[in-house]
Amino acid sequence: MKKVGLLFASLFLMLGLMAQTKYSVDKAHSSVNFKVKHNGISFVNGSFNSFDGFIQGDLNNLEKANVEFTVDAASIDTRVEPRDKHLRSADFFDVEKYPNMSFKSTGIEKVDDKSYKLNGLLTIKDVTKQVTFDVKYGGETVGRDGKDIIGFSGKYTINRMDYNVVYDPDSKTIAKEVDIILYMEFKAN
Image (cartoon, rainbow, N blue to C red):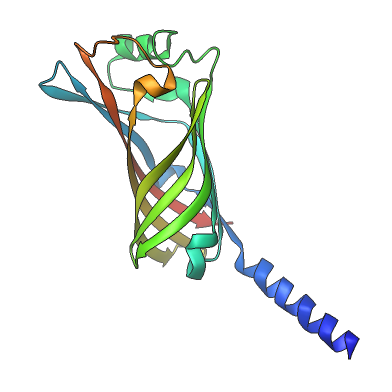
C-alpha cells in the first residue's frame, strides 16, 4: 500500500513539475518603454533596447507563476544621443556603477480573466522597492516552431526620486513621475 501511495505522490509531483513551463521573453516582439513629462507641457518617450526575462509557471494558474526581468540601463534610447548620454551619467542612471535594473515577482493577483496585479521588487540603481504593475493578459498562440507564445502588457508609475534619480529635484524641467509601459511576448522553452 505504501508503494502505491508513493507512486501516486511521485506522479502528482511530476505532473506539477511538467505544468511549470518556462517562457523566455521574445526580444524581437517585446519592448520596455517609459514616458516622462517635460517642461510641464509635453512628454519625452523612450525605451530600453537590451533586456531579458522569463515567466515560469502554469498558464492555467498564473497566480503561482514566477516572473524575473533584467534591463541593461545603458541601452536607454530616447532617439537623441546627447540626451541618452546624459541619462547614462551619474546625474540619472549612473550605468557605470549600476549597469542593470531588475524586477522579481513576489506574487500575482488575478483581477479577472484578462487582468492581473503583478507584485514584486523593482531595483533601480541602489534602491529596491515593492511595486505593483497592472497587467493585461493578451492571450496565447502557437508559433511557427510549434512552441506556445503568451502575451502581456503592463503599466506602473514610479517616482524617480524614490530610486535616487534626482537630477532636477524641483521638477522644473523633468517630472518626478515616470510611466513604465511594457509590451511582452514570451515563448515556451
